[in-house]
Image (cartoon, rainbow, N blue to C red):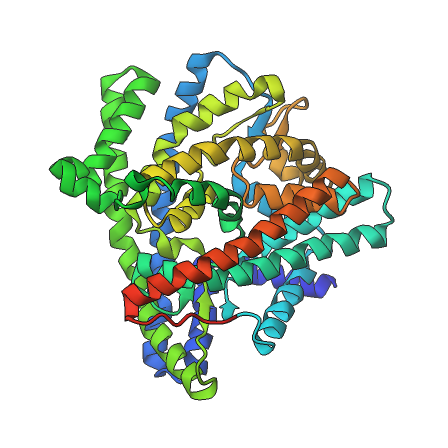
Length: 471
């Protein structure tokens, strides 16, 4: 076990920008691409991931001090420190049995592909940690509820297995939407961050009943057509950054600096995102041809991480505009128990990607659903804070560096908050959480039915065909 764990840790240490392109290089060679073409495509994908990570870190570094400035103006002090996803990933991988999530994820994917229960091949093995984190939380809560060690391990991996299945099915559902956003066929995003779309489905269906919202394409292109220069990427970033900066700092110099930083990010995100298309389009063509020859009438979707859709202007406009709402909600929810103030994960990409896919880029609907979903993230992260802190002390003390003894840690915008809370608590014997999990799975089946119908329309728009994969 130690040898396997050391091997996995060595592979993961390459980082997603190296690990995922290596996987895609192998896929390209498997589907008979020329070695030189497969290599260039994989290298370009690595460049795309690296460039996108640089921009996200740049944007987060620029925005976080402004968010802290806004929080300081309220005078409210919350004792749970938002450490973001890197700390939680470290805690998860420090669990001695964590390495078993790799064969679990790969095995389920192979079984479902063979049984035609999915058309998604998830090569985003880098994000195995998200399944592992669910398993660790469930294991820890089950142990605390009096389960034996063996039973706690069992329910932990059961929760992770359910997550894998839902991710793959969501990959099938998202594929046409991802193609519409990126222009790249046969790719999808089977990431648990999109689980929030399942919870928000009733709101989306309600908003569809409002003609003013549903019959208008209220996206970034619509903004440009209505307000001209003020709808340009850089100008939108400039305005949003300046308003946020002037409110947070009350200092013209700092506000203008943040404004230009936001403008820079908004202008560069679409440019870097084009590299994903450049890298993935040739691979997806070969994969499509490979599948048509061997599995007549069946498509295969390559499951990748969410940054392939990061060129969407609507995603970044929404995540930045949600920052004040996150801070307002954090303070408003203090009387009902909230203890976390989002900083390290102040750009809530978990909800941003979910509402982007669910609303199809409609900015008004994205903002409405983002505001509604924000309290869920805060309250779930608060509920997990004591357990995350104890897990850090037990498995990864470095995650607590610089944090006082009385403080706890959390991941304020944790992916799949409802599913994780329901699974971890439900498998630990909490009846209410168990009922929530059943309701979540029921909504998931409704979601699949709704999106099979929606995908017929998207495929007709994209290809003049109404055929949808049956998996």
